[in-house]
Amino acid sequence: MSTRIISIINFKGGVGKTTTVHSLGAGLTLKNKKVLLIDLDPQSSLTFLTFANTPDKSIKNIMVDNENINNVIVETPYYDIIPSNLHLYLFDKFLASKFAAEKTLARALKKLNKKYDYILIDCPPRLNTFTTNALVCSTDILIPCETEILALDGVGLLIQTLEQLLGELNINIKEILVLPTKVDNRKKLSKEILEYLNKHFKTTKTNIKICSKLNLLGLEKVSIFDLDPNCSGSKAYEKLADEVIKWDY
Image 1 (tube, one colour):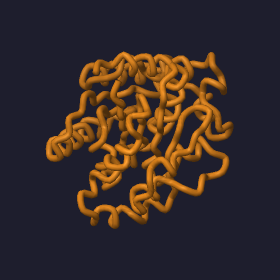
Image 2 (tube, one colour):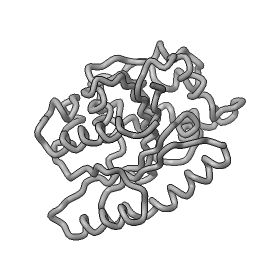
Image 3 (cartoon, one colour):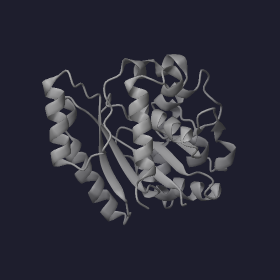
């Protein structure tokens, strides 16, 4: 099986982007898949969810310093991860000036020799050189979208922007799917927005219901499955992992 590389992206904050990378990664590991997470977001939220102390090396060592990717990967009980840090903000223009800058990450990933079943990339919340690098090497794109009215704003434009960029770069993406998040069946508006997403966009079969336990991941530094295996968040992300595994190749 070839490696499935999934970019998780949304330019709007608070939609569950990093939580999805973290929990889907742990869910796939539970299914006996070999998983690598890449924190490509300078905000480093995924790194924060994973580590009590930030590792010395980060994605910057790969993207800017051309260090071997295998020397930067950190093993955890849930997945392997390439951390990020705030310094990444400083290097976007520098990276953009490099020859074939958009292929920097793709070149690095070739050194992994297909050792992973899945690579999940936590993308920056804006279109920049790092985002383009993620898209170039991706097989799929997942767009978390909160079922709140303000979160709807921009989803269509984001998909349109991504499709235009993918066309310009001649990138063949197998799936671009919207993942409904923070679904609250107690609220009529949340259910109506879920229906709207399903009607107007290609969505995942799985949606992520609102779950307070997901907000505790950064405090406990564990996966949602260890935090509470019976909560709605655990059940939803396990279901999403099953769905991703069933995607056609």
